[in-house]
Image (cartoon, rainbow, N blue to C red; front, top):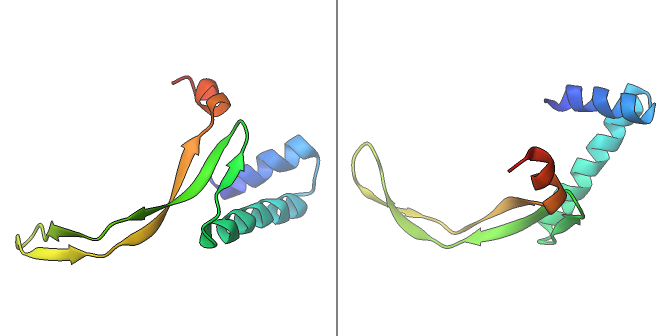
Length: 91
């Protein structure tokens, strides 16, 4: 499912106009992004949790040359599915 298909599904499920459904979805994504950029987790009970994981700096290898390279530390978003989502998918 892509974003336009998600907009269609939300529009049909809520009886909102597609424009309004798109605004709601965009606002949801913006709120999640803003919270994560402030290093706050977003917990949606039954669906899952979005949070930030910090990776340490490490040394890696360039696959073409075999040369050692330094990989910097960084922050990455992470999603952990909730129990209800896991059960719905059938893991």
